[in-house]
Length: 563
Image 1 (cartoon, rainbow, N blue to C red):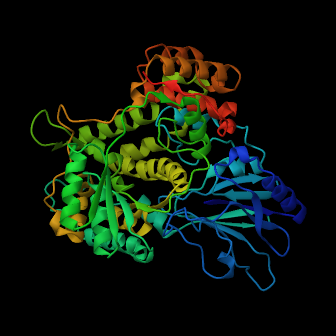
Image 2 (cartoon, rainbow, N blue to C red):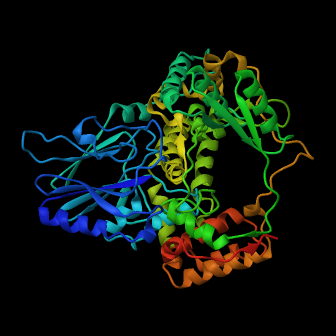
Image 3 (cartoon, helix red, strand yellow):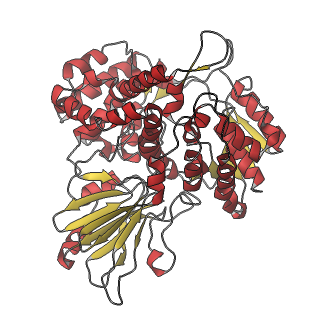
């Protein structure tokens, strides 16, 4: 795994100064071993590409975006999102180029300083190079404590922004030009909800299925079977069927006890597809956990963008040689957050559709709860600024509530949460996520939204890929008495409660945390026993980020008893 950073400046001296700054990045802010090195310099000295880490047997296979071939691509980033472009004329200046996919799950970050611009696939490295590592964006902290992931273009660092989806950047002599491709325009104009009684229009199901097969087909030459994380849900079975249809050797693995519905249904899917199925039984509840190491590691590994409640791993992981795949991104086939709003469970019997007026109200309420559910934790000024940043979604919700929720999921849940999680996963494994492929996503969004929300598209795609799986039921909730894995993150006892309270309040006092967070509200949240443990984890993450404590992620720490 390696990271890439590009510098473009108006003068050779300006480029050299920023390049030296990037080369001197503190290893404590990078999640894998370095060192940094210059991979390419332009002939006129006004542009450079740097690399941190080594290209090992980790990283994605079949990147979502690829740079042009040829000499200009020789020093491209791991995902092909950043590269040295071609000059406009013979002997002319060489631009730096960057490009994001429609989902931007392979992110690009941009920082502009006087006379220069910096691009990177690692936000903290761009922040270090632009001398903004300690400038924490209050909007990011507000988002971390509410939806739990950054929104729009915001990053943990003021002045460092996440580039929008389907965008191409061209950096020349320190100036940046932007262009959005047809994919972005298509993503903004997805079909609306079908009229009641209108027959399903699922012509696009075959396009989605063919896109999935095309996305996994290169794995036939990987040299070893793909390890597929298979559950009893809707999405991983699509990937299993696509792998088999493409002729890719695959071994399915499921984590759980033998009587859990996920294990039972996954076994039946594997049997019908004729693939090997391995079940891994969860370990017994641990007696001690390393809470401090987890918090610090999450900030470092996830670039400060996810809560320590998430399982993202540790820095400097031992790379797994296995090629892995999963159903990440399947919600894009089902309308994202529109699926939650568009359907409601009846008091008895099957789920039923919601009337349009009520659907609009539910959509607005869903987005409000998602984005502002813990706004009471935030001080008045930052809370007002955060609420204002969400205002552009209000007219979109008024015009097309379901479509707005679908778009919000694409832009933010996929484009920010999945991007941060994916970067963390790629540190330790060779990961394939076909449902994020541009061709697949755009084909799905060409299908009427009602047909995605209803689940008709997912069912039709599965029928295209493997009719034998059409009648395999989805795994429901485990019945009473079924073995369930112990989740210490939600079930910790007094020792962890006491530690988290002290950690947050101590670091909050010596950092800028309580410039954004209301201390009285934080103290109420932290009063034992913790009633909202997921939010406690998010608050601990915020404290670790703004205090810089994450830079100690490689230090030895002490374990605590869970109960």
